[in-house]
Amino acid sequence: MSFFDKIFGEKGQDSEKNQIWKYIESEEDLTKAIESSFSGKVAIFKHSTSCFISKTVLKNFEKEIESSGHKPELYFLDLLAHRSISNKIASDLDIRHESPQLLVIENGKVVNSASHQHISADQIV
Image (cartoon, rainbow, N blue to C red; front, side):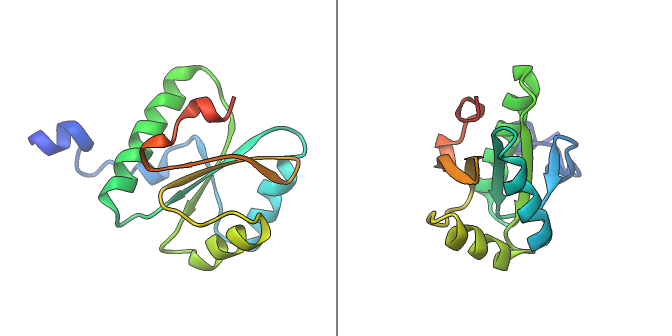
């Protein structure tokens, strides 16, 4: 295992396929995520799959969630595959686009957001 693999994850590990996520791949998926926010907080992680920083933040966030014991409803958006959905989020929820970005939504509104190194599981609680 190389030095970089130890820090940033082994080759072949596909963090985007982690079982903690529900995937947003359509506007209908986004609508379901927002509707779920009326029953409790949900979080959307907007991730650029080609960005080294985004990948590192994602891995750290997943480790934090998995060790926390708290099991929030988490949604994952691949920005490169679904840029139009990201634009819809920014427009509909009146939030500036960033990447990586974590949006915490409650009752259909963004109640917390963070990007880059400020993303933390603590924001969802």
